[in-house]
Length: 311
Image (cartoon, helix red, strand yellow):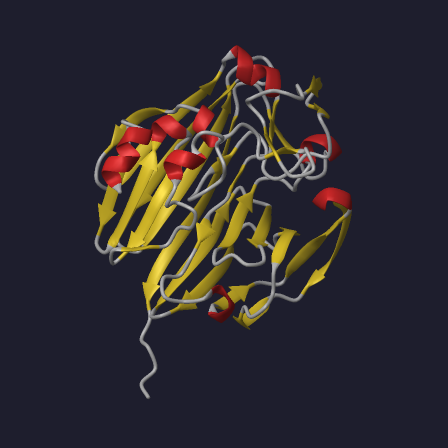
């Protein structure tokens, strides 16, 4: 698999610690393209990365930047700028209804590796190209630090406002998780009590919320494409089965999350988001970074071995 991935991105970086292994593609959006435990793959949709790279279709652990999820249309106003997105721009990924989705596709964002060893990778992206500024006219720099220990992968993303403009923050990540040997319906999941964002047409939040009681137990037939406001800065989700538990911990900077478990698929996505969907249009919970200032957000994906019950 690694040789095939190196053709997609010669700057590929592999991290290893104990029984964990992670592979990142700095030259292709800092895509997390593999996350293995004891040689078994925990990420979904990574079997055909070379094909998905053509259009930047989400897979593995992609960074969704400069916005996560959907915008309600091709125009947004944020931090003093009005932006009209080009309908035919190759720099946009769109959903089935034609709405701008997940910002600029990962495969069109080449990052530069700053440092790398077996347990730590740091890469940066300067948002200063003309074609990127046409989509998001806020000069900034992103630095992503990925650290792998024998128990967890920790991802810290720092946005620095490098120009004269205030920069809105709306990025997120989309980890596609799978549990080898376990059907999704049989996963034991733990989801905390949160505020469920009420959605209108095309999955756009209306601004209203309703209580969500959380989940403790088997996922069963539930499906999700839902946004949530988190109960606190540190929030933990988990999925378990076949002798292991995967924990997704929102550590700092993330105020919202998305759970994505579509019908007839075997993956489950638990997505850290720095703002709700459509925040660039609605302004809801949208945070701003002043010139010269920085913003950081961190999440962690941990793995625990579990003792299987004896018969």
